[in-house]
Image 1: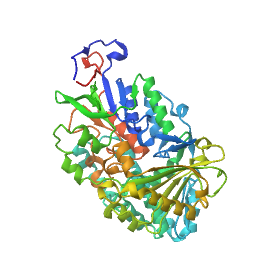
Image 2: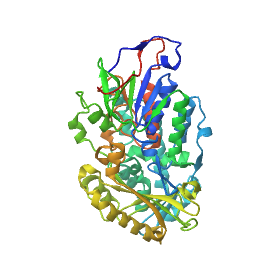
Image 3: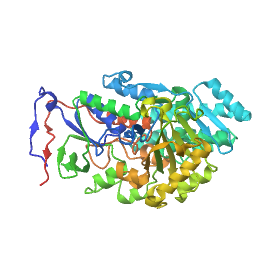
Image 4: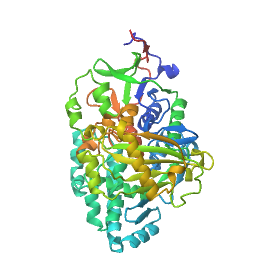
Length: 524
């Protein structure tokens, strides 16, 4: 609804700027809002949570500050570029600390693999584990570098919404054997199973099955080696808070504890949003940082869709779910000195466990864990003498119907505790003071993620680039998408890049033209 009020004053200050609404204050939505503000829009960001950051937000409990989702920054230049494009200095707003080592992988048989940025250290590490694979490892890194240049710096930072955009790059996809999986590509270069895991597990951090996700994602090995792995002091939530401050400095507004129920349409274009409760906020441009599935299935539920129909969304392959146990300990600072900031504890099965998660939909008895211990880098995350942790286990998403989490959550947590005590943190149970669990049901309810998927749409080759929901919606003019479910995809660099691509598609704000006021209309 609108009362028909318009502005026609090119010198009327912020009120004369066209209004843009961003649905969702995840990192992709905040980055989009920053770019729209830099393009001259007056921006309102609306989020149902009480803090910005979405999956990158935090919860404080008993003096422990828990990062809820992403924990690392791997391509810091995309953040520096975002700040620079907004006339700001990222380094003045956020402190990044380089990790060394990046992480340690611990295998069931007692072998370890420590990932570092120093090329000489990595050569020695590979020679220690599998000297016969040294040449293959070096070749894999060269493969990863080429795929990074093409897959991230080229495709990942430009629009891919036209079919011709895809057709033009098909020869390169063929050249790089994008039809092969990451694991198949790693297996073609190295023989040692430990190295095959170390070179192929990365798609799990963006929601993909390493045995089916395109080998283009081998690029992660290059970006780690070339740019390092970093921790933002204060956690990724500190980045989200800094983004919110930039938006406010640009004249934008962040509305928390407010949920968008529907994208409104007028004259065949997106005209704003209607909130739960009936309030309408009008806008010239609407950006959805909500999950792409939620955007098309719920927020456009009253509008016919040509491509992202309910039937197509049902056929879509979604990323796995996540079981995350956040826990705090007392009296452990200095204990477990061999457990650093990032540790990956690999279960007894790799390929078969991945099949359980992605194909069979089976909640297995065994698990592999990513363990985050930020207190070794940032003591402020825990009370004095204590530690803050989270342990993450990939599990089937809710669409598989694999688990009743109301009854399975505590038994699964107990299995996780047992594995942690046996493999990493002996005596842990005696020191736990705080505990919080997220299951796929939490992701469904907190983030409105279809099937409780941890990373939106799985990044298979036929669900990547042009095949993904586009940054400019083909369903409704004036609607744009940012975040993990659109191009180029999930992960901190990916969602920041979605906003960069979006910024190339949204026109600069035209001042001196008739633009609708952002009316707030109470429900009738």
